[in-house]
Structure formats: structure tokens, C-alpha cells
Amino acid sequence: MVKTRQMIHGITYDSEESEVDDITWNDLDMDNVFFRINHTQSFLGEQILYHRLHNTNSKRDWDLFEKKVKFFDENEDLRIRLEKRLHGIGKAQESYYLTRLIKHTSDAGIKETVILRLLQIILLVCLVGAIFFKQTICMIGLIIIVAVNITVYTYKKTKTEGMLTCFKNLSIIIKFCQFIRSQKDLPAFIYKGEINNDIDKLKKLAKMTGAFSSNRIMSNSDPQALFVDYLMGITLWDLTNYNHIIKVIKGNEDAVMRVLQYVGEIDMDISIASFRRSVDKYCLPDFKNNRINIKLQKQPKFIVSGSATELTASQIAKLKDEYEECLYSYSLKIDDIIKGVNQEFIERICCHLAKGNNVLVYTSDLIQNREEFQQFLLDNEMSFEGFLTKVSGYLSNLVELTLNNISAILILIGGETSFECCNAINSEILQVIDEVTYAIPLCMDYKAQLIVTKSGNLGNANTLVDIIKYFDCHDDE
Image 1 (cartoon, rainbow, N blue to C red):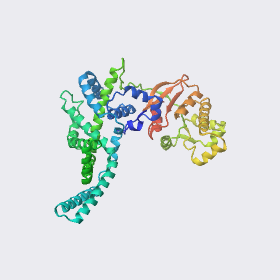
Image 2 (cartoon, helix red, strand yellow):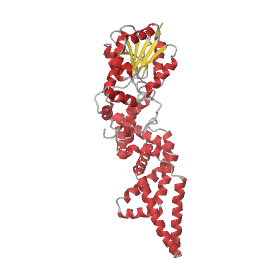
Image 3 (spheres, rainbow, N blue to C red):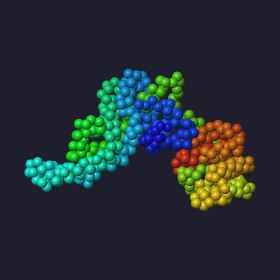
Image 4 (cartoon, rainbow, N blue to C red):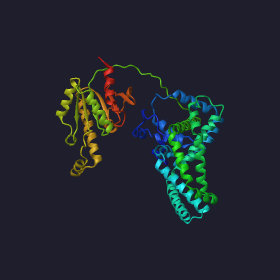
């Protein structure tokens, strides 16, 4: 990608909702899907679209979203007018850091503001003394304070240069919102009434940022403006203006973020409408709950985890706490992997399962001391990838031998673990029969073996508990 994912994913909101993790995103080749859909004209629209594709939670108001897309699709003249305005915001590389600059730029401290005002007062006193009273000390003081002010201005100017594009974009974005407000043909669901107050709050900010960025840009190209820039440096006028603008932004940060989100959503809606015009056919999601209330034969659960993520470790800890009385758990060690699956372990697992208990075998504690593990790899002339292959081989062999002896519902955690274990029991083709919990399917193979597969990075701390509770609710007594 020309722009990094971190840049494009700059605007994040509704963070409490579930998101598609990077592993799933890559597996589905979603970068190419994003590039195909992306008809946005601004960096805000691009960021909102990228975030929206990561967020698949059906609780969103999809009806309103579809209503807005349909409106822009049917009103081509208005869509083109808005696209031209959005194009003015553009996709300059620096713009993608706008939200971070706003959030992480600290207020101009009282101490700094006082110092700037003090330097301005000293300059004024020395200037008056030198001109009207012809005082030598005032003339010397004037020379010194001019040198100090220019030094301070030059130093601070380089530090504030990064905000120049930020100010320019803010001015254009607020003016775009004012343009939308002036359009009489926009329905209420397009022009949000609550955004009105935010625009009024930021009207002054638009003028301030626009004037500040224009002066800075001119000073870099026009010789006369360059002289004015030096004058601003001597008087520290630009720096006091800059501090005032930052103070206004920080005082209205929520309003600024709402405006950025609003403009980004408008751009995204228009982009989706344009994309649909570019294809012959497209389909719309149906979020109706058509789930069949199924009943499953009660069986013990055999849970096998090859994931080493922190999330998986927390899920396992939660599961062990919740089902302490009916769950037998085994944390595998490096020696277990090297020696391979032994018959005694298989018999112990089968014994627990036969009594209706659930069994958990996991590898979260496999590598407890990295230095010792590195030494182990060196002593055995083994690569890390080779060790991971042994882990997958051990788990797949364990699953195969166990299920050859007893029936159980198989719950697999980790992408590679799921793949290898399903291959070991000849379950390459799975049919999805239900959703256990969000984004986690319940599958069945040709032998009627029930299998649940889950990525190690998916879900929250309660996900494994939720999976077991699903079967508790659906067991046919």
C-alpha cells in the first residue's frame, strides 16, 4: 500500500464494537476490496471507509446508511457538486495525521503564553524608549530583544510547521460543512441537525486557521510577505496567534472530531454510490435473524488450543475459572512436544470425556523463559518454524487418536491448529450449520463431527465461556 494502514486507519470511533482483525483481513485479501470500492475524494472519506470495512457489527443503522447512499445515487448533480468540494480537501499525505495532531497537541501552557507576552512587552518598552527618549540602554535592549524574539520565533516555527497543513485542512473542512448547510435540497437524514451547533462553534476557528495558513504559505514564496514574516517574528504575533488557535481547537475538540467524522461519512456514502454505478450487479446484506433453533446431541467438548496470543491466554484463564468442576485442563510443555503423543495421555483424556467432562489441552505456557527456549533450539539444531511445525503435528496427532476412540465436540483455537487438526481427521470440507457467537461458526463434516474453529486473536476474554454456554443451551437432553 502506498499509504500505510496506520495512516488510513487514522479515524477510529465506535471502538467498543467488534472489528475484523488483521489476520482475517489479510486472509480475505480485503486491501484489494478496499481499493476497488474506494472512490473517495478526501482523506477523511478514505479513513472512514477503511474503518467501516473493519467494522462488521450489524447493530449499525444500516437502513440509514442505505438511505443516504440511495439518495446520492439518485441525485447526480448534487453528488458531483459535493465531490468537487470534497476534492478540495484532498488526500495530502500529511492530512492523514490530522486527528492525531489534534488529539496529541498539548494546550499552549500558561507559562509559555506568559513568556511570549512578556517578550512582547519588553520589545514595546525598548522600542518606545529608543524612539522617543533616545535612551542608549533602550537601543541596546531593543537590539537584544529583537535577536531573542527572532531566535524564539525561528525555533518555534519549525516545531509548528507540521500544524500548517492541519490548520489549512480544518478551514476547508469547516467551509465544506457551511456549504452543505447552504444547500436547500438536502433532506434531514443527510444534514444532521446536531452538526449545526458544531459548525457555529467552529466558524471563528475556520477564519483563524485559514488566515494563519495563508500567511505562512505566502511567506514562503512572496519576498514582500517574507519581510512581513520577519516582522511577525520580531513581534511574536504569529506565535501568540498559533497558541490561541490551539487553545480554541482543544476547547472544541469534540466538535472538531464530530465534524471530521460527518464529512468523512458524506464522502464515504458518495463513494459507495459511485462504486455501485461502476458495476453491473451488486447485492445488499440482509440482517434479519433467520437462525433456526437447533438441538444438538449432548456430548463432551474437547478443546485444543495452539494459539500463543495474550487474548487466548485470558480466554483460557476465564474458562478454567468458570468451569472448574467439569473441566480437565492440560498445559503442554516442551518435553511433551518433543516426546510426542503417548498412549497413557490419550487414555486419560478419553476417560474424562467418557464421564461427560470437558477437556482442554493448550500451549499458552509452552514458552515461559525465552532465553532457555532459544538455548533449547540451539541445542537441538532446530529453527523456530521447525518447532511450530512439531507443535502443530503433536496437536493434530492428539486430536486424531482421541477422536478415533471417543465422540466429542471438537473446539479448535488458532488458525494453523484448526487447519492441521481438521486435515488429520479428514475434515477438509466443513458445512456451517450455525453461529456459536459473533464471527465463530459451528461446522459439521461428512461424518457428522461437530467442529468449532476460532482464530487466536478473535473475541474477548469471555469468548471460550460463551462457546461452552452455547452448547449448554442447545444440548438436547
